[in-house]
Image (cartoon, helix red, strand yellow):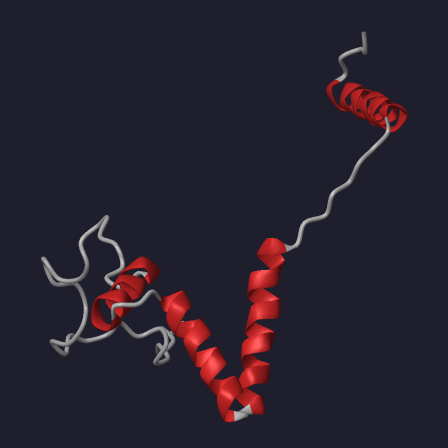
Length: 119
């Protein structure tokens, strides 16, 4: 039985002198990304003397004054999708009976999961 010829995928690569491992090359372990959000915001402040949120509000108001409805809609969309999520709060109030019922149901479910009897 003759040996089968290797395909291009199976053939070992010959050295071309390009790529591969080089001692000391690449990022060192534990190094952080050079660009951070905090760094960008600091640069915006350093170059303009204003915080990014001030610039954002100013640009929004300028678009409104100029009647640029497309840009105004984009700002509204940004505000509604990003800012409102952090402001929206749902307050749920339960009666004492509802809380006691939930505690009992939780204790029963925990007991079944762990095999520890309820007291």
